[in-house]
Image (cartoon, rainbow, N blue to C red; front, side):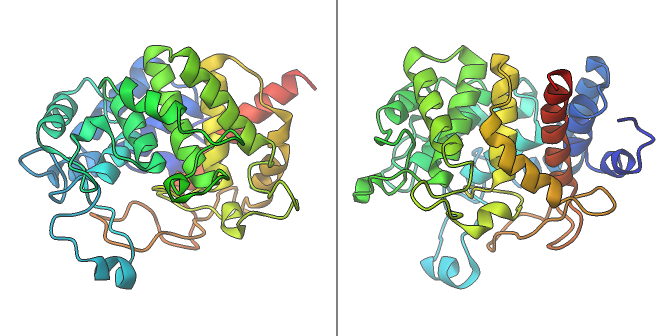
Length: 327
C-alpha cells in the first residue's frame, strides 16, 4: 500500500491519532516520520481537544467511572455516559498519546493523587472490583508507566474455569463473557508489553485467548450459534463492548509482541471481515453506543469509518502477509 492509494489518502486526510497509525501499520513509513506525527496527538486534533476537557485535578467530568453528580436516570434514558476519567484515559491511549509527554505525565500523577472509584473509594491506580474496569485500568496504567501489578495479580486470580473473565462473577456467574475477557486481555497484553509480564499473567492471557479462539471469536461453544449478533457488527469507540474486529486487532497485537503466527481459528472471523468490506474498499461504522461524550470522532452510523477501516486493513495486512509467505 502506498500514499497514492485512494483509501490510504482518505485515511491520511484525518486526525493525527489516525494518521500516525496509518503511517506505521499500513504504509511502513520510517519510524522518525510516524513518531513525529504521533507527537501531534498532544497538541492537535482529538487528543488536544480531549486533554482540554480535563479538570484541574487531572480527572475528567469530576469522576473516575461516572461524571460528578451523575443521575442514574441519565443511564436509563440517554445511555451510559462516557466522559469520566476511565473512558477518557482509554481514549487517549487509543489515540496514541505519547506516555512520556508532559501532559501525560502530569495527568497520571494527578489522577493518582485525586481520583477515587465511586464503587468503594479506592485510589484510582489500585483498581476497582469489576474485571472490565480493571482490565482497562491495567491497560491505561501500563501504557502510561504506572505500576499496576497489584491489579494484574487480582485479575489473574479471578479467572473462571473456562479460562476467561466475567464482570458478573461476584453475582455468581460461572461462565466467562466475551466483553469482560477482551477488556482483561488487552490490559494483560499492555502490561506484558511494558514489563514482560509475570508467569501468572502470561498464563492467564493464554487461557483467555483460548476462550475466544475455541469459540471462533463469536460463537457459543455448545450450539455454535453466534453468542450475540452484534459481535459481527463493527462499532467505535468500543468502550467496554466486544466485536470481532476488536478481538482480531488484539490477536494481531499479541502476535506482533510474541512473534507468533496467526492462529488458524481466526479464519472465520477474518472471512467475515472481508465480506463486510464495501465496494470502495472501505468499511462502515455499523453502530455506536448511546450516551454522553465529549465530542464525536467518527463519521456516523452507516458511513465509511476511518477507525474501522484502519483497524480492518492492518488486521488483513498482518494475516495476508503471513499466509502469502506460508501458502
